[in-house]
Image (cartoon, rainbow, N blue to C red; front, side, top):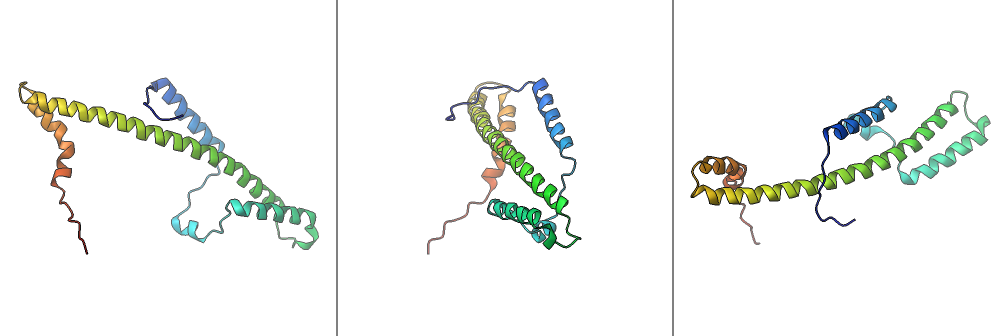
Length: 158
């Protein structure tokens, strides 16, 4: 659906239900971990292309148990593979949802900012003739002070 204008509301009750649903998801995934950057760097990665390799390795292990040492935990390998498949599916759905929430937030934030700029322009104009609006115009203008005070970088042409 092409973006036109976001006209929606999110009731407090719906927001609470969404938060509860997210909590339910977290409760259903109590084994989730947080890795440090160093831990992430050290791990062997399994991407989309590796999934077939892992699947084939699992099939080979299940079909040829006698070549594996007794210390090799085949059941753990099966659980890891199945969990990786399930989490891949969950992650895909979460990424799609995150992308939609992010895009909607970007759009509705832009709409709100555009409306705010329009209001600011009206307040600045009206402040010239309407008593009491000068302070409000200055307050709204605070948003732009940092931008005005930023030094402009000169474009160097070599």
